[in-house]
Length: 571
Image (cartoon, rainbow, N blue to C red):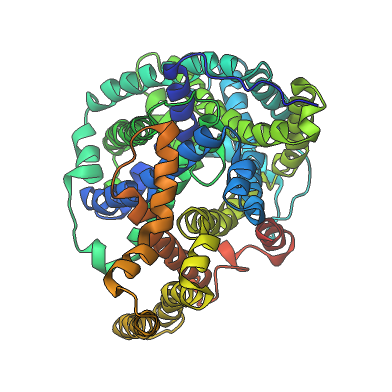
């Protein structure tokens, strides 16, 4: 049976808005501003911008370019690099679908809060305190008031189950009619939140006390956190990963519907820049509001009102809006805005799965709407766990464990494109001994150094660097000696070993995606995979306040069911 004709976006703006919508989500509002406050105010922007330029943007460009060049989803593009790498693409898509599994229940809580603002809460959003708003969310919306001390789930919250089904039906409606309609829908689901962002920004910065909140957000530059709190670097990279969604197969799927010769580098730059600008402006809106809340409630310090995550989105922020003239309407606008931001990301994550399924042999034998129906039905079943009264606990645990998969997949993607592409050609040219020694030298030295850095209680930073340079030096000397024995021009052959395959990939992609930055192939092979390996090993060795590994003991939650569910997700 011939393959179905591949759809293209209705226009370039439609693609860009859909891709920006996929990147921009809840984390831009509830996580990014709080991280800036936690890590030295404006100082956080240094690791954030470096991570964005050196890791986030190159990986985003990789996904868009691969999808556009091979006109297929994640499984197909990595299978094109090497048939054995199809699992890398499949893992990315499954990781994205796991995120969708808890993202849509979160979206359904937003939908319920919005709808109830027209019902039983129509008179409730008047001069509400942050604690009262949080109690409403945690107890009335999620239903956590029935949890015992062990936090085990005790019941299904049937209202949330109904809203979960409605949310998935909305997502199905966004993706059921093809990529052209998805792009047209994005004009509203991303365009309107952009307008609302500036509306919230303008209102927040004019509130009394807003200046104090903005000062806490970006006015202070505590540069000491860059060395006293080294986790700021891994946190910045993680924020970029989650925000841009570069390890979920979304941008590969979206790129595969771009016509040949679309400017992939320019598109990736616009998406990256837009996502960060949204986060930056949202920070002013959030912290301007928190500065006002601090004055309004008579708090002694801005610390007393700064929150992040659901407590910010459903607690402090709507509490601020409820005190304004027309507060109920501001609260409704907030929840409506959050729903639009969330559904953009949700249908983008779903589209990554649909693209892979439609590109498969089975997908070519059944209708697209049947594929959509099966996908949203399975997604709905995945989400039932989060509609229990312990739904937020499950969400927190799974969200943590997804970090392991996400960083590992990012490493595998960069390694596949930077090292495995044309690997057999390199082995034919240099011999297996030299190529294998080069790979082992590069990643073996980093791995052993990481064990020194993160595996011991004492300060072993200097020891780690000594081991890194020593092992790498020994390996490279071995390679150089082998080249000399073969009477090769060492300088030329070393450059060829270091760069030839990834330069070939760059030149191949440029035939269909336009010019790619000169530094991109170097970052893809000699910076990004090494950095992500360090972050992954750091995460593996991370510990709780009690000195136990976070893996298996996250948050102090019980082993069953919470840790088991989280570990199952990783495995």
